[in-house]
Amino acid sequence: MSLLSATIKTTVTASQTAAFEHIVPIDLTSIFKGYGLLPSVTGIKNQVGNWDIAGQTRTVHLSDNSSVQELLTKYEHPRYFSYTVSGFTGVLGFLTTSANGEWWFSINSSGQTTIEWRYTFNARSVLAVPILWLITNLLWRNYMNNALQRSKALIE
Image (tube, rainbow, N blue to C red):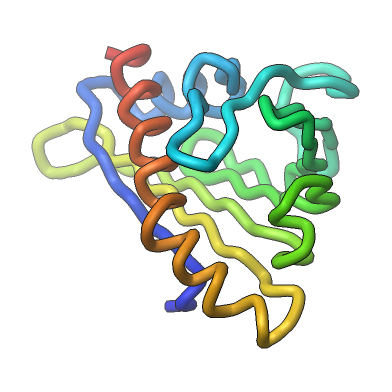
């Protein structure tokens, strides 16, 4: 596992299909409220159609007036999707060239759905690695967990 990667999991009382169909197109402004120095999502632009075909792109705008580009790289209904984040215009742009997000949805032995989300930063240079490690482990994991728990509350 990468030192610049965070993975979180939760279980929801919803079917695999229902969980997947709720998470993939979710309104990012409703779940990314900011955490510490990490900004909230304020809007999505340039998205054409549903977020359900590999190759689709969109621009995510953040509360610190920065933005990122997202590219949906894989969409396997109802079990997996992945995306690449690039074009960081804020502080993270000095530290990372891109990031990769992956989501897995699986049925567990009790019939509930386990959701696993991994986010990995790709450092711009070896000098950025220690700073990204701190961000990933002190802030980003909690930022992700808060977003996932908000998502869970909306599903259930």
